[in-house]
Length: 208
Image (cartoon, rainbow, N blue to C red; front, side, top):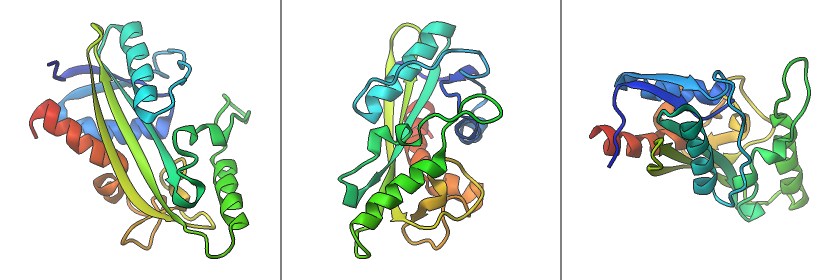
């Protein structure tokens, strides 16, 4: 089985916030993280119907393009009352918008869509939800490894906090009173779906 060592690792993302989180989690292991966006790699079409499939698509594309090991994250928010939606289509609900610079996703639009559907269900709608994260590592020879994580919480409205990214302002983890966008980043790293998946990756790849 392949294992990550010190050296360069491509993070298969064009999302600066996701890159920061992943790089921070990998910092203790001597890996030099560079993003697909920084390398000018195109974003592959995420045609999978699961987080695992999409993470592997992104990791394999980056590994083949760079001939370096690549790590991809596919994550999303699932809402119980909406039958697990938006789920694997979490990012798609944010669409693509043109601002002053490159096109980006409008996460407040996405959060509003979820809230609108919950509001239609009435004041007693179940607001329980969970974040899922799949981390896929791919090597240039086609080998791969997959790690899955999850954190449960409550869909909170209106959005609160300026930290984090994506749906963080509307996600309050179980047992907490602050959203992911309000809490200290280090505290989020300790309990997030990404941290759960990373703990499994670290145990497998580094024996920690």
